[in-house]
Image (tube, rainbow, N blue to C red; front, top):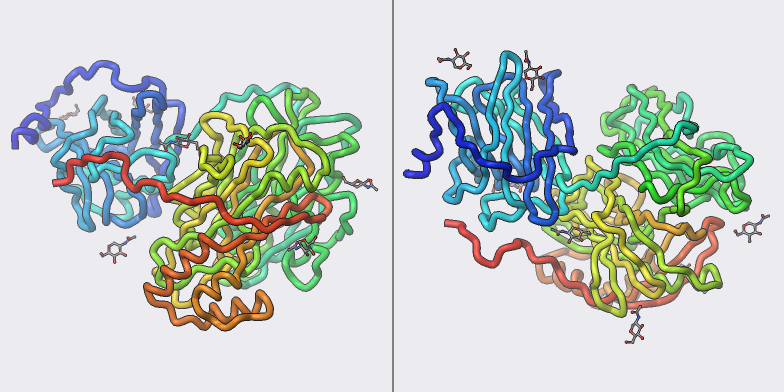
Length: 561
Ligand SMILES: *[C@@H]1O[C@H](CO)[C@@H](O)[C@H](O)[C@H]1NC(C)=O
Ligand SMILES: *[C@@H]1O[C@H](CO)[C@@H](O)[C@H](O)[C@H]1NC(C)=O
Ligand SMILES: *[C@@H]1O[C@H](CO)[C@@H](O)[C@H](O)[C@H]1NC(C)=O
Ligand SMILES: *[C@@H]1O[C@H](CO)[C@@H](O)[C@H](O)[C@H]1NC(C)=O
Ligand SMILES: *[C@@H]1O[C@H](CO)[C@@H](O)[C@H](O)[C@H]1NC(C)=O
Ligand SMILES: *[C@@H]1O[C@H](CO)[C@@H](O)[C@H](O)[C@H]1NC(C)=O
Ligand SMILES: *[C@@H]1O[C@H](CO)[C@@H](O)[C@H](O)[C@H]1NC(C)=O
């Protein structure tokens, strides 16, 4: 009770000193389904002391609640609430919801109010907290996407309605670099023209387009999606793959993964955008080379449409815009696709809360592919890609069989927020190191098995790793030995991979069988495969290195009840 008294600050806010960073370099607009205006959220954090300051600028309101959660339900959402009561006195408290509205006060008050003010049009709330408060009621701020909700109200009683609620997925610990563009930046677009989108849930369109023609070496330093207002929400991803010199170029648009396999040539993904993504600036020390004899002359553009409303006759002219310059940076950079070879070998039993699949990259195969030693690779950036059941992805870095770090992770992956993220520090990958991509799926809402595959309803498990210096390799990934898994499940021995999958499809899952399958998936040998731009492959059989799961909560002692 005494806390409540202390927290009811009669009109005046205490001076709190300069807690946390004063700069708020990160910002996003948070929108509402029912309104045209928005909440501007600005924030800044300090990685050393693990603190964050968040400021909300809302449309005029007497009360503001900021919610941070790991899903969009109110089951376990952290709230901080501030406002003015009917006597114009301010109030402020740390709260949470457990499935019900409104939020209730936490026993442990871990937010600090730095500012609360309003004028005729806007209200402002600025708060400070530690990333890890050791209160289970508080959302830990870490390398994960956080579902942010802001609820505003005219009175102290907060009403949960669409026209008072703003939502967005935010990654608070994003690493920004202020990039200076040279004056001589050129622009080039890879795009489709009035492509008729199929009236099916999933369709893919592919065609081949030229790289910019330049007589000397240039660096591509930025890319961004070219959006078509008619297909926003339907375009699910846009990938630009660079082609090898042996590609059969097709001038029409075709189905990327249909009967004509010529549309599935060029598997070296170089520029990628997916729902919720934004533009991407390469780190200031590298660019993607174009214009030398070793550089690709053509790309394949792949657009994946998710037309779940089966709209007919939609025309799409989306694509990707690149920015390039003759002002060269110190390094050539490139992207390596790691994870699970896209093929129906990956499976997730129905009714799983957190089933994990693995893809392995054995970097020694990169040297086998090129037939020469390769220098250490420096990883700067990553992009995680899974589909609708994906809840968490980790790109784990192993040396000599030991986990030594991370090349990117998000334990709260949001399919509709696929953001290219810079690592806080560059990471060195030595040849011989292993990269394991772990994808955790939830299939509580599914009846049958979910398999790997290109449809949004299938799964993918990909970690795009951005690195320098560039080597002419497209992917470094793996498939597990499915026969090992069917054997562990006591199923009939199958002659082919497809027969083994059919056997798995017939399993009547219960908890015991899911446990056996999960164990087998972690023990099964993998066929690690490296592919180059021309589609040539090398492979080897290899077990996964030992996998350990991250601790679910950072503090040993917590203050729950
Ligand atoms: C929230 O809790 C309800 C009731 O326990 C449950 O049915 C629902 O699946 C939960 N939602 C999420 C996203 O966990
Ligand atoms: C409360 O404060 C606002 C802004 O300072 C002022 O416009 C308003 O008249 C005040 N209302 C009351 C009831 O004092
Ligand atoms: C009210 O506050 C908002 C947000 O800080 C600001 O953009 C706006 O200019 C202010 N309006 C006036 C009239 O001062
Ligand atoms: C095509 O590229 C490969 C590998 O980069 C190279 O070995 C080959 O000579 C090239 N062929 C032509 C016709 O340029
Ligand atoms: C792995 O371990 C071996 C033997 O302990 C050592 O010689 C080698 O340098 C290590 N490799 C790396 C990349 O550290
Ligand atoms: C976040 O990820 C980075 C890079 O992967 C890692 O160095 C860091 O320890 C992680 N931080 C936390 C709080 O997990
Ligand atoms: C793996 O390599 C062997 C031998 O080079 C080859 O026969 C086989 O087709 C390769 N498998 C795949 C999936 O690339």
